[in-house]
Amino acid sequence: MSYLALGSIGVVDEKLIEVLLWAIRYEKVAAVRAEACNAVAVLGLRDERLLNVLQDRLVVETEEIVKR
Image 1 (cartoon, helix red, strand yellow):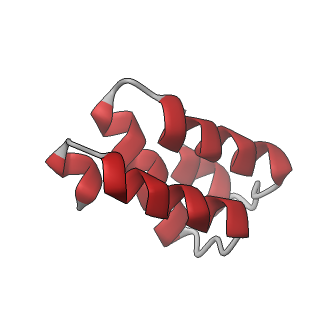
Image 2 (cartoon, rainbow, N blue to C red; image 1 turned 45 degrees about the vertical axis):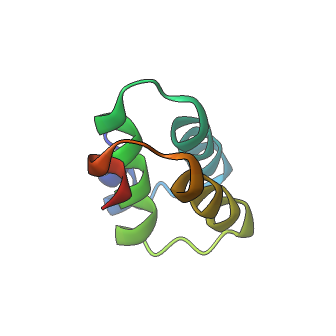
Protein backbone atom coordinates (compact mmCIF):
# COMPACT_ATOMS: atom_id res chain seq x y z
CA MET A 1 0.00 0.00 0.00
CA SER A 2 1.29 3.43 -0.83
CA TYR A 3 0.53 5.68 2.09
CA LEU A 4 1.70 8.71 0.12
CA ALA A 5 -0.69 7.96 -2.73
CA LEU A 6 -3.62 7.92 -0.33
CA GLY A 7 -2.51 11.17 1.25
CA SER A 8 -1.91 12.89 -2.08
CA ILE A 9 -5.50 12.25 -3.14
CA GLY A 10 -6.81 13.61 0.13
CA VAL A 11 -7.46 10.36 1.95
CA VAL A 12 -6.00 11.36 5.29
CA ASP A 13 -8.43 10.01 7.81
CA GLU A 14 -8.47 7.99 11.01
CA LYS A 15 -8.04 4.71 9.10
CA LEU A 16 -4.86 5.94 7.39
CA ILE A 17 -3.47 7.12 10.73
CA GLU A 18 -4.25 3.73 12.29
CA VAL A 19 -2.51 1.91 9.42
CA LEU A 20 0.54 4.15 9.72
CA LEU A 21 0.66 3.60 13.48
CA TRP A 22 0.50 -0.16 12.99
CA ALA A 23 3.17 -0.16 10.26
CA ILE A 24 5.58 1.96 12.27
CA ARG A 25 5.15 -0.19 15.39
CA TYR A 26 4.82 -3.74 14.09
CA GLU A 27 5.78 -4.13 10.42
CA LYS A 28 8.64 -6.62 10.05
CA VAL A 29 9.91 -5.27 6.72
CA ALA A 30 12.20 -2.31 7.36
CA ALA A 31 11.44 -0.67 4.00
CA VAL A 32 7.72 -0.62 4.84
CA ARG A 33 8.42 0.91 8.26
CA ALA A 34 10.60 3.51 6.55
CA GLU A 35 7.86 4.32 4.03
CA ALA A 36 5.30 4.76 6.81
CA CYS A 37 7.64 7.14 8.67
CA ASN A 38 8.29 9.05 5.47
CA ALA A 39 4.56 9.33 4.77
CA VAL A 40 3.99 10.95 8.17
CA ALA A 41 6.62 13.58 7.35
CA VAL A 42 5.65 14.22 3.72
CA LEU A 43 1.94 14.46 4.51
CA GLY A 44 2.69 16.79 7.42
CA LEU A 45 0.67 14.72 9.87
CA ARG A 46 0.79 16.14 13.38
CA ASP A 47 -1.28 13.55 15.19
CA GLU A 48 0.03 13.18 18.75
CA ARG A 49 -0.11 9.37 18.54
CA LEU A 50 2.02 9.34 15.39
CA LEU A 51 4.58 11.69 16.90
CA ASN A 52 4.83 9.53 20.02
CA VAL A 53 5.26 6.28 18.11
CA LEU A 54 7.91 7.88 15.87
CA GLN A 55 9.88 8.91 18.95
CA ASP A 56 9.54 5.40 20.39
CA ARG A 57 10.60 3.80 17.10
CA LEU A 58 13.71 5.99 16.93
CA VAL A 59 14.88 4.57 20.27
CA VAL A 60 14.47 0.89 19.35
CA GLU A 61 15.02 0.87 15.58
CA THR A 62 18.09 -1.02 14.35
CA GLU A 63 17.69 -0.54 10.58
CA GLU A 64 19.43 2.50 9.07
CA ILE A 65 16.82 2.81 6.31
CA VAL A 66 14.16 3.52 8.96
CA LYS A 67 16.32 5.86 11.04
CA ARG A 68 16.81 8.23 8.12
